[in-house]
Length: 430
Ligand code: HAM
Image 1: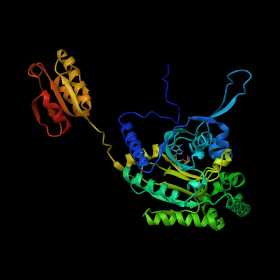
Image 2 (image 1 turned 30 degrees about the vertical axis):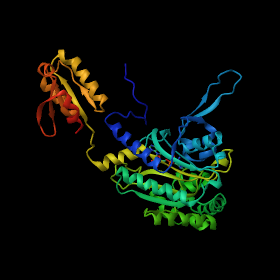
Image 3 (image 1 turned 45 degrees about the horizontal axis):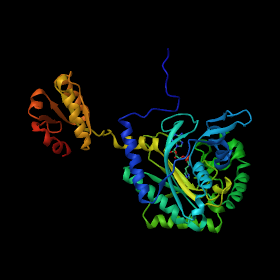
Image 4 (image 1 turned 135 degrees about the vertical axis):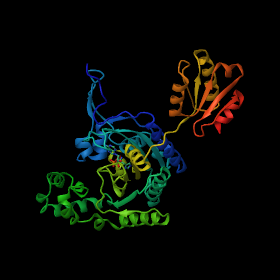
């Protein structure tokens, strides 16, 4: 019988690799708490219409990449419902905001999430069909200050601090403004007009995008089309005064707190809900991501709540690709350092197995991390097993048990000593 494997584009995360995942998540949670964020957990699947309306029918995500199914009716009288594994979580968070009337509190909502997302993309390094995002969303009624440029700058400054705290080297922040709901149609009209005479000289993908979603042409990486794309109109020239002023204030606040950025007029991002500020953080080549160098992306979505039938609730947020962050940290750190246990207890005979378990229990209750060997192991085998995973080996033989002591070997120094059981904790804690 052939063996069963994880589905293409999905993978198992195993120890010790999960140590780094846990460290990243713990650091993110600690940083988010300092900025006043609370955790939100939304379902992993939602009605398909949420993404069609929120993310946009014409986007790659909705038109090609979603895992969607018709859910069977529970009773013959009920209609089947189209459901989708979430390809991203902003739409779900805004749905929850509307459903629970969070706007009625009048307060700014600062929410974060950590969890899997699903997109049927062509798998490659840094691109999976199930991947993890660490994201934040800040939204609220206009009176809560949700639209203020200070929110944009705060989010970007927090990301800069988080990446620094995690030890990501060489990150680069690219920002742009894609304007408001009124700027966008004027820009799109200009873009369509400029594309009309040149689109036939572009690659097939861009010819299609020029028809269905011209903004997507701007972030095309097709090398043969770059000159034509660079000559297209820039969105910055189509922003109204309020949008230009908003963007200028975001940049001024970033300057004030010393966050370096690059304005990239072609950064439009692949989701339809964005308005005004958009951004991405990338890492340099050689950081383990291959061509997938966007570590995270986000932006403002001032009209999303209304698109989903809710009240006006301007907002801004981001999602970090956790898989990509981990690949980057692994590549930049070189050799991964795996934390070792405090002690490996090695009973020297089957008669000492029970005593080893009792000692392990007491040490674990005192907060130490401990593994136990088996009394049928030889000393050499215990030594090899212990050296791989622990800082100390605690040897329990007949002698030791009768004298209420243990022999402890410290691998870092090679030192070996016989100590009273009562002193063991102190030595292991040091
Ligand atoms: P996004 O740019 O589609 O934005 O995804 C954010 C990040 O998720 C990307 O920069 C990338 O690191 C990671 N990512 C996306 N697709 C994959 C994949 N197939 N495999 C591995 N990593 C991937 C959003 O999802 C928005 N919801 C972000 C946002 C939040 N905007 C406002 N609030």
